[in-house]
Length: 315
Image (tube, rainbow, N blue to C red; front, top):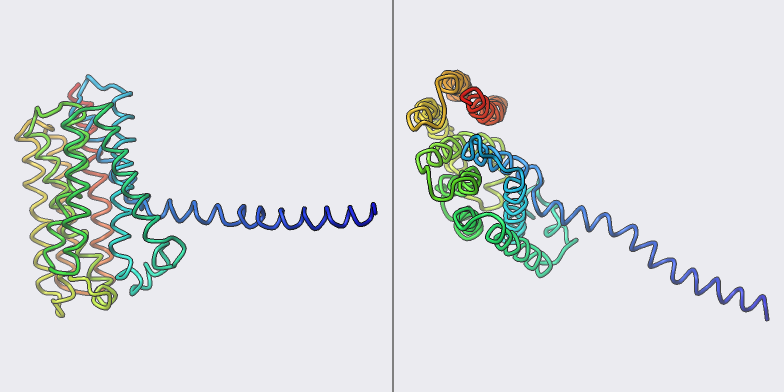
């Protein structure tokens, strides 16, 4: 009897332990999938510009608590928007090698799960901003969320102008930070921050679209490089928008957002960026497009870093 009881207990224990073991093994994977839905690398870059917008708007009246509330709320909104973006793009993602293993096309999460996850994160983020920061910041975050999910995402399969449309919500994060610091005041400074980020995104995303033009075309995404076999129009737009960053930088000086330290520094960074786009105009290769991409990733943190340094020197 004792042996039978022990054997029975062992069977029960093993039958309980097996699901627990599987749960332990599955949990990190599901957690990683939910994290992947939020596009953490993009979120970090966006939150960097939110923080910069707040610090520049607040000036010497920085409040750490308000900044933290702003970053948390904006982060939740961004995470929710990214999840819903992946929900809407699950079919196109399944056709591209670099996105086919995302949680939805990979079959690891259901559409219903992701829809609830994205909607809850976005809603909680907006409610949090409204309750802890300001109406202006909440409106800016809500506009970012709506344009990204409801305008940019569906337009990616319909028109090559989606890049310009998507640059609008992509340029709003520093405005969220600015509004958290100053409400509706100081529109000139907010507009200058918006323009820097808006114009920067065009050559940045065109470089990516050129490198992945074949994959985007197979997935049915409408990008300028996909309807520009020679790359001449893509190169022209890259050069024109990168060059536009130089006067946009001086606009920030004109509206009082920054001084001449920033103006000169941003012009130098802009010229370096233009140089790489001109290289692409001469050699429309994936290698040169990658150089444009690297130049864009140098320009953006460099410009925002200069803005913050300039603001500190002014104090």
